[in-house]
Amino acid sequence: MPECILFWHRRDLRIEDSVGLHTARLHTPKVIGVFCFDPQILNRDDMAPVRVYYLRECLADLQQQYEQAGSELLILWADPIQAIPRLAQALQAGVYWHQDVEPYGRQRDQGVNQALNEQGIVQRQFWDQLLHAPAEIATKVGQPYTVFTPFWKNWSQQDKVAPYPKLENCTKLTEIERQVVQNAGAIPLPSLKELGFDWPGQWDYQPGAEGANNLLAEFGRSAIYSYQEQRNFPAILGTSRLSAALKFGVIGIRSLWQFTQDCLQNFPGNESVIVWQQELAWREFYQHGMYHFPRLATHSHRAQFDDFAWENNQAYFQAWCAGETGYPIVDAAMRQLNQTGWMHNRCRMIVASFLTKDLLIDWRWGERYFMQNLIDGDLSANNGGWQWSASVGMDPRPLRIFNPNTQATKFDPEAEYIYTWVPELRSVDVPQILSNQITPLERQALGYPEPIVNHQKQQQLFKQKYQLIPRAGEGNFGREAEV
Image 1 (cartoon, one colour):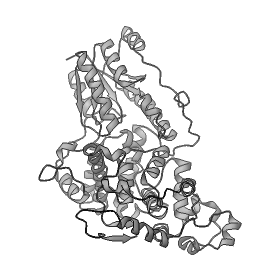
Image 2 (tube, rainbow, N blue to C red):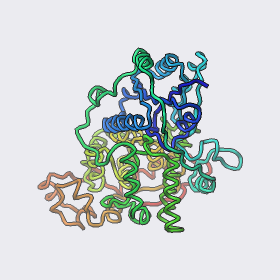
Image 3 (cartoon, one colour):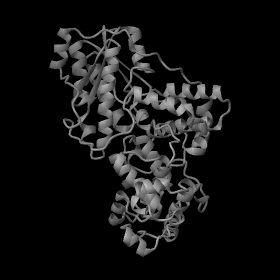
Image 4 (spheres, rainbow, N blue to C red):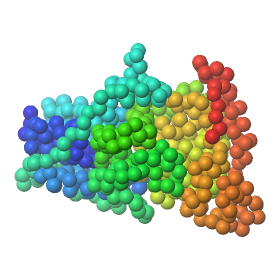
């Protein structure tokens, strides 16, 4: 075992509750962190500036965490397949990292693994971002689940590993080694501008491990115990707001599960806590799906729906993106996304249903726009949510069509959320807003557009097109629900 181990961070930007870091520290006190800015990821046209901002701030926080542990975090900016082996060779170090579920990540890791093996460099990989690795949860015949309920029943019954201790009492690089790593490509942490991005907005919550733990503590004081009732109301702070922290792994999934167990100790059988546990399971359901079915990244899970007759009206799409559809709840949600880089989960479902089933636009257009703007944009979760909303993915039944006016009435009954993000409507009475019965003259005076489509007509058209797609084993049309 080498004297020095490099731990290659990706979506695990913390030093606590990390299986790879914990294992490395058992072997040696000289555990050095490394993060590599990958040009193939940074240069993607669906990379959101707000997400790069959050990543960069989390890395600044991670550098401080390593400093407190007696070690340091090295920064690279190059192709990891060349950069990671080059750095390891220069230090005569082993390399540990956590496995990924995404197609590009797996391909990249295979390349790094091969390069390390060719140079005889010790390397180990671990599952860390999931409570259960994809191979651990399967049907009785050994197949991956494609429906959530049986997945949850199996997943929830499996024993969960306890959180791992925080990295501490490490050894830094020597001055000679520090010169070696600079020659091997290590650089100071770049600014957001140096990375080629600009984010003029401001994220309301502190990036990094401390910020994530503060949010978790706040959630645990009260909101989690009423989560089942309040999670669907976008005007209420009824959710954990930890999605970005989970995306980048600034808080460990085992720590979150332990948190839920502690909550259940305080309030045994609390349904809201169990519902939040199910949300953690949905996250893993979609990640397992991406691992087992990598075609999901570009195609519908239900392959026959790749031939669906989307209309893909570009003007409709631009109105949807801008929050100018004439449907207040839809426009409020899209403006929240555009201005903050985040959107409430209930609203994500509303706008996704509207794009696909009212505007008849390919779900991949919406998925891409979300990834271009979301601070918590995660391929597995975003893709899974969009395919679910479009009724083309896993767990597709019943056919769900969200009525935007019904959704607004149920989940924004005082129009607080709409008033916040569509301020030109603040003079309009709540019943008018919720029913969307705003007269053309009022809309003109307020500068708010007419509805770009008729919901009732569009849902019928969607159903007609949906009916034409053959669905083996689903009967003629399957169950149907407008909500």
